[in-house]
Length: 67
Image (cartoon, rainbow, N blue to C red):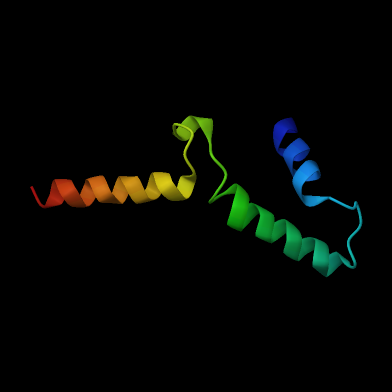
């Protein structure tokens, strides 16, 4: 968890200030949903993004269904 907060602070809180609470919510949501959960490489997935891992999974699944 500490690693997560560290990355969040380093990547999201560039200037340390948001214009409003709503702006902070939007930025945090975008960071988690569009970068951290989809694009960021995860060591537990073989250093690929969750998005790529899911893509590979369905490719293999479809290949196995058609053989």
